[in-house]
Image 1 (cartoon, rainbow, N blue to C red):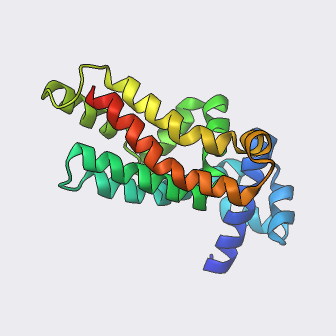
Image 2 (image 1 turned 90 degrees about the horizontal axis):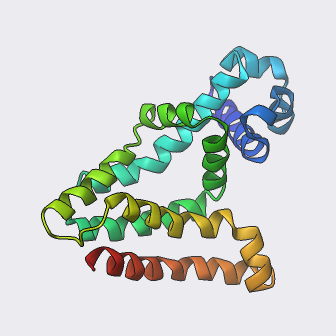
Length: 199
């Protein structure tokens, strides 16, 4: 498959899958969105399920490559957390469809989602283990690390998932103002989560 055709298919599939989910999406819609015939999609991917997996793995491999590099670095846990927050908000700002896409698939089939996450190199368990090690080493407050991870993800994800409502209610539908809010959110989340974990 040439790279331009592949990118057209991936971009069209991302848009349709995010909008309608795996179950609601149709290959004909994706073909129309990509400006090509459905037979070409079937030729390259055979089925909607194969295309979905390819798109999802592509999203996750790009999304987690920087996260993985941070986790494998020699930075302290505190420094890794700061870099993770910065990278996460930057990546989601550039790819705002990702959180809703993931939430849709969590609700549809969490087992398939988990399998595809690990196949694409995502290691969410590593973050939990990192915090658990710090708790056992008395470097963090004695709190279940799962609370840390869930609290962190909630603070990072909700402003993107809830953006249409939040932007309308609190920012008078001002996109620029909301983007500025998301930029400011980096420092707010860092301050809050560090106070939380350091007791």
